[in-house]
Image (cartoon, rainbow, N blue to C red; front, side, top):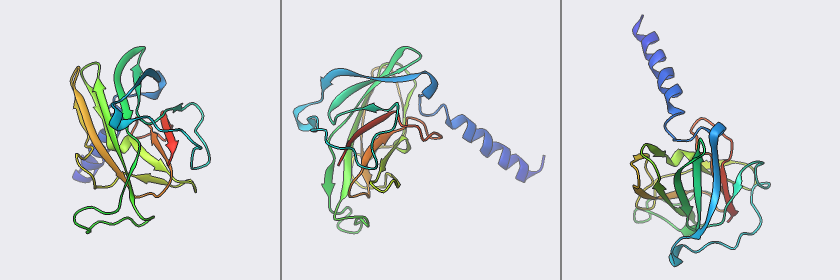
Length: 187
């Protein structure tokens, strides 16, 4: 096999393997509320209308601060909670400024793994803007939300920074899918 063919084959094999990186195959994944909310500093939002043309069918409609269970194959795999977005005008001493409005939207995302091997990935999240554009996270607030594989009982918290003035936060829980699993209220 030539070097070019081997490289292409390796890249394709890696992409096929990415489906397992997120810890969630949507065919056997569900989301439900635990009925709990996070600490007072991360209080649930008021809801409001969804930006970006409404909610996706089948997506769990969540509130900011609500603790949600992610189940895979009928078993709870993890819990997730997202704090209400905060506006931040710039990062890195003014070197990084938003292009789509007066401020970046920042979200603190918290996970607790119920079993070993649950993967978290910032690329599972995006903001759908009112005009339907998809905006991925960028570098900004700390602690930055990085990809990680969690052990049983392990907690993870990371900050998502998005260059979008308004929109709806969406979790697809799958790098190679665009199907919404969870959506939070428009901001």
